[in-house]
Image (tube, rainbow, N blue to C red; front, top):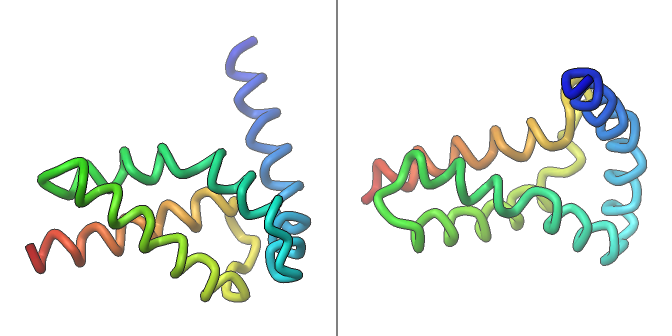
Length: 100
């Protein structure tokens, strides 16, 4: 049952992603706040796997939001918006780890 719940959640997220992206492109602040609420903690946790401190991970996650907003038009819809965002986090965290 839990597996079905996860599958349903993933499907709901994927089908809602184009609407979220459209709202973000229109400058909808509520859509952005909802996105941050849903994904920011996971972004920090993922960045932390690549960085030596929680503070650096938080900084990378915040920087990623700027990248997400700037590159939003590049999201193709082939994967979920969440996976696209987390891919940005991995790339940014690895780059930051190299510099540190």
